[in-house]
Image (tube, rainbow, N blue to C red; front, side, top):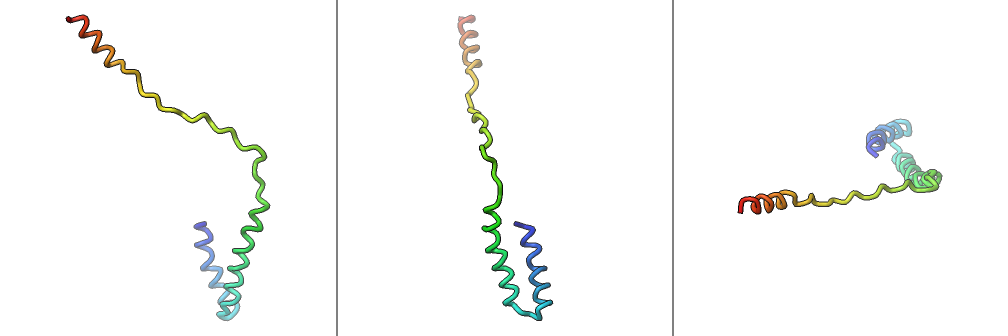
Length: 78
C-alpha cells in the first residue's frame, strides 16, 4: 500500500509529461489499475486447508498458596 502511494505520483507525473498535460490519460491509467486489482485478486491461490489453530491459552490464576501457608502458620502458633 505504501509503495503505491510513493510510486503513483511519479508515474502520473511522468504520464503528464509524456502526454503534454493530458489528464485524461492519467485518470485512465488510474482507473485501469483500480479495475485490474480485483480481477488479479481472483487468481490468488489460497491454501486448500486452513492451518490448524493452536489451542487458545487460558489464564488460570495461581493457587492461593500464600493463603494456605498463612493458615498453617497460624495453626502452629495458636
